[in-house]
Image 1 (cartoon, rainbow, N blue to C red):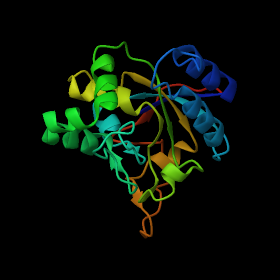
Image 2 (image 1 turned 45 degrees about the vertical axis):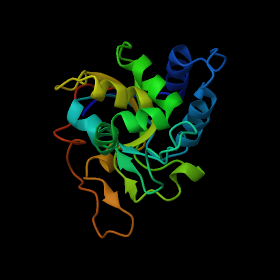
Image 3 (image 1 turned 180 degrees about the horizontal axis):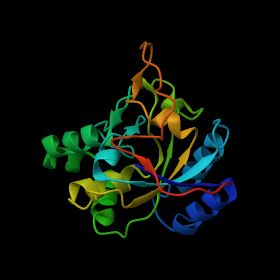
Image 4 (image 1 turned 90 degrees about the horizontal axis):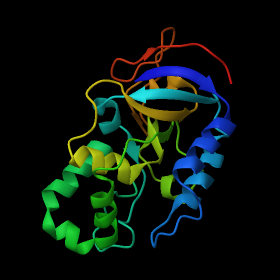
Length: 207
């Protein structure tokens, strides 16, 4: 993960609404919930950062509970799964998962060829019930972009180098460590540039 620069929340909020309008006509439009989670994430200490992500970074992002848009087969349990683990679950279930979760599957089909747009992450879970039982409490944690990240991985489109734009809420040093499970004794590394799978800073700037 490359850390590009610090940014103000207003930039993050404007970028989100530009790509994900709240009033978009879609039967499964959940953009209002994404906006609410951005507001929750704004309270995480450390401010906001513009970042670039590689496929390896994306596959390690922790996803919260996801019931597959009201489908019959849960995609992500309350303890969470990484993007890579969730993608493997979809691959393994195949047509059975698609048939049991038609709305979620339709989103994934639609987004497979969609242009890359920024994903939204935090270094700690936001204060919402979907995140309450996550077994990971620090690292790269999803705020918005679950279907996009999964669709791009399933389509084989995620970039090998750090080229996917994203916004990160929280101290980048908290994302420098391998994701910590709740109750673990691990502590964050300090004293160097933020790193997730070889992350590096590429620019300065302030909010």
